[in-house]
Length: 241
Ligand SMILES: [Mg+2]
Ligand SMILES: [Zn+2]
Image (cartoon, rainbow, N blue to C red; front, side, top):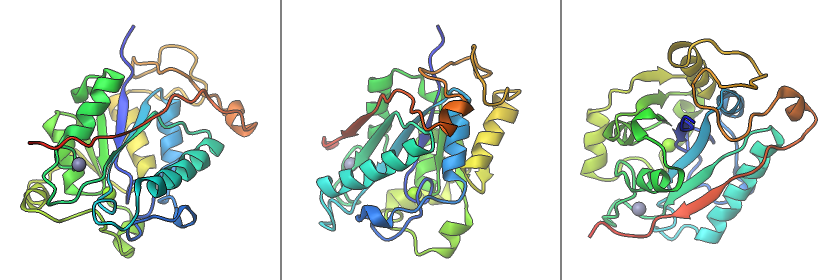
């Protein structure tokens, strides 16, 4: 049986609008096209894993319990739209903490690989920052840089530049695709990479040759039925040294 394929998604500026160190669940706003794009990816049989730098914890702006509440809200809102997230991996450190997991370092993806047993070069890595692209390229993944209007017009940048390593990533940034939103990511994957998209009713081995655990049919979404949740949340605390 083929391995499931995964999309590794950045959070701020990719899934939700990057407001300054989001800590109140009520402030959670999805980027334009994010929910529909994630739904399309799920329906194509792909797993979704969130990989996010949250230095607001290290900086003392909010604690882990607060972050968990934000993620609980995100998971719940996505679930009402028929979107299941397989896991959320968080780096709580700051640029000066020298951890192994703050993007562009690869610790969070390595943790996800251990948990989900996927081949990293087979993944699709999506983010709005060069550091996200650098992580994908470290594994030979197919990379997508999201340049949506919400980010360009918003304040943004709460977890972005901060170290020479991150600046270097921005200078070297050459994603495989530059896209407007997650809908475009899904369209590119279905068209160029996975071939013909069969529509919502995928009941057999998918075009990605990688059927995932649960396939959601549109009727399930419309009636509010939820797919089985298989979710994990992990925080990597180890430091590099
Ligand atoms: Mg981001
Ligand atoms: Zn870290």
